[in-house]
Image (cartoon, rainbow, N blue to C red; front, side, top):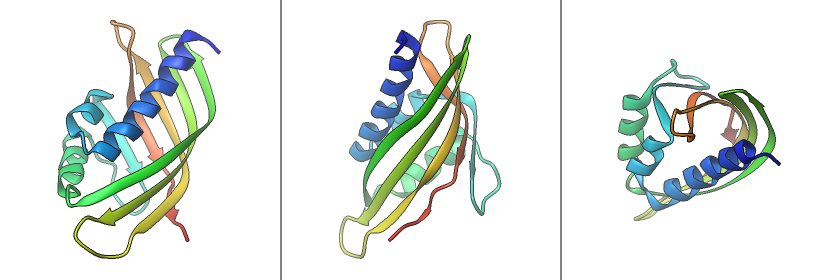
Length: 128
């Protein structure tokens, strides 16, 4: 495994940990300012809309796992194929919602050497 592949895996692990902790600032630091997210049933959206959605879910407990399927590094660009399982549970009461599926993520290496998300296609659906 190359240093870049390790660094990209660390981005994924940090994203999962920060999401579980509700650390919006940390999650935002892992994405480019011009990031675009594509999810089923919605128009593509950027960093500001992501932040609003994350903040709106502050009453939820997020838990999840990630299994990296593939990483390909092409200079200062890379793509990542990943399988995610995410469970969102209301903190006060209510039933948990579980979603699972694949993502295809494009990352860009910054001048300082860190990797950030620039495009993310999330194909998760409701799971049982």
